[in-house]
Length: 529
Image (cartoon, rainbow, N blue to C red; front, top):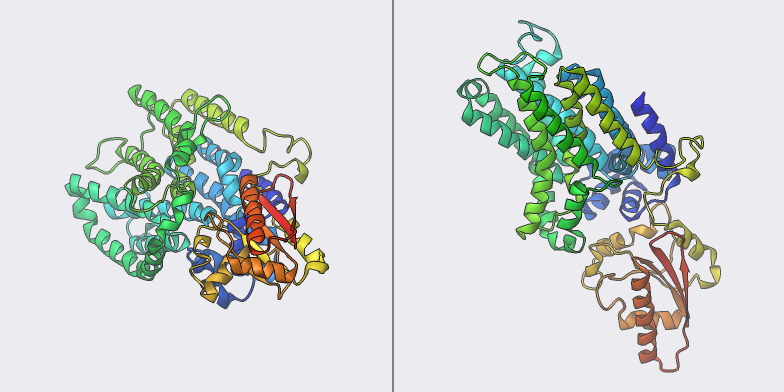
């Protein structure tokens, strides 16, 4: 019920907000035939799996913000549900499961990615399913769940071969959803490898299955390596948007009203667990004969901590070492579900009801205080969309509609400074497919009329226009310029146009008007020569 309630909120939000730049890439990728999806998605440095899935609701229900975001919407709801089921399965704690569902439902980051037409919400969902299968495989192969699985049991959950097969396929599915999901796989490899070294009994039971499972996964992911290599070859494009400080702020932010939920969900439960451990108030569950009491749940807790922190440490380390500019929060999202799950597990492994209730109340209270839904008037207003908090601030629809409506300037070129990481090569790479990719913001859900003269220009270079562009503007008697950025960038581009026009024609008289959108980072300049 909690997940469904969160789904209603997300559904309204997904329907009302404009698509931002990255989502317009998704809109363009899925907007035509299924045969176009692969090339268009890979041009945007993405694996095509998510886009094939997103093509289905668009093809059957039409193109709209809600249908483009539909896959992410379902994945976000599923993450709350499956995450709570994982905690319930591992601890048998209904309270822990409910807390996980509430945390995921209310959290801003989960809401944002659960209403964004990008693969990250699906990554969050599949990562939880994969971790469930990973631990089921470990328990079956190591004999940890002998009481649940009786000899000759026909239950699929007690079939180690089926479980291993599902684990391999889900792991590959995770990689093909987004390449940065590799952080979770590497965490599991390191975890199992360390356990194999330290425990002879575990090594004796599971090493053959580990080798076979890892080999099968590697074979399935070989095609992805070629796509990953092509992305890595262009890694320099991410330098302007990669920021270690931004990632650290996301996870270590601490103040009275803006404390990072990840800090609360990990550090606070960890403190409670230490106190509960010292007082001997851990839940006593079955452990394999070669492990001491409570070892199984402690291993799971340690693993979840690694699941949560490894992606963060990985992107920071790789960026800091100069290997690749990977310090983006969204590249850590394969571990994001681990934070609320750890909080739920911390509640579930304590037998003292006071510990459970106290921690649960604190976690839910902080989420209610910080949630964008409950901090406004959204609930009390009867779920009216006007009361929803804004998450995205790019209105591409208004300037495009303005251009389409002015038929007197139909023959004038339209320049696009979309602030894409790739548009730095707009002047050097004239390949038709690349030039078409740079224009996707004008060819997706919000499209300019066909047969218009569209020209991509670099956003972050000092020179945004070539001399030939000014001659085209003069010949057409004017132009449009769509700019995604700040007012400072708009002023810079306007000054460049005026300066180059005077060099080309000292008698030139230009009239440049700014058509800005309220609370939007997308601006429109109209030029009359």
